[in-house]
Image (cartoon, rainbow, N blue to C red):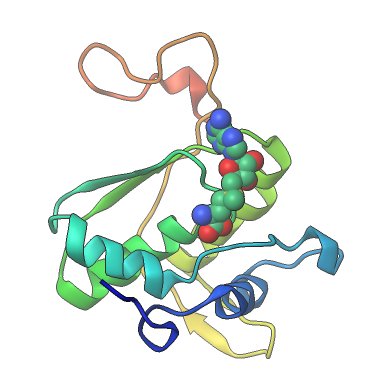
Length: 146
Ligand SMILES: C[S@@+](CC[C@H](N)C(=O)[O-])C[C@H]1O[C@@H](n2cnc3c(N)ncnc32)[C@H](O)[C@@H]1O
């Protein structure tokens, strides 16, 4: 199967999407190979159900958390996501910041207001404690004040 740039985007498109949402102090800080949301949406269309939980254990710039609510908005889905990012600064300044802005709306780099997609999220710091309690609830001591 061939996926063309025109259908699923490319790295330059992904960088443009990213810098429109999250500010970076310098161009060196921008991710080298972020994924375009259109690419992740194509994967969601093929490989998920409308109520799937999507795991991305290399979250980086948070494209997955952007693509999931976009896809939900397009097809009426209720997918949720779990992202894991090991670099604290990336997790706070980029991944979580992107998710927050996508959910709540933001003013893009051109000064245009972009409406939020309405999803929410919880930010947890992992430790030696298990992430989930026996009843499936998040271990609340891990919830950050973000
Ligand atoms: C190439 S980036 C991911 C790009 C992402 N798909 C996007 O569109 O932005 C890989 C990320 O995974 C993180 N990472 C690498 N090893 C990891 C691990 N073992 N657990 C969690 N995150 C990890 C890195 O810090 C980096 O931010």
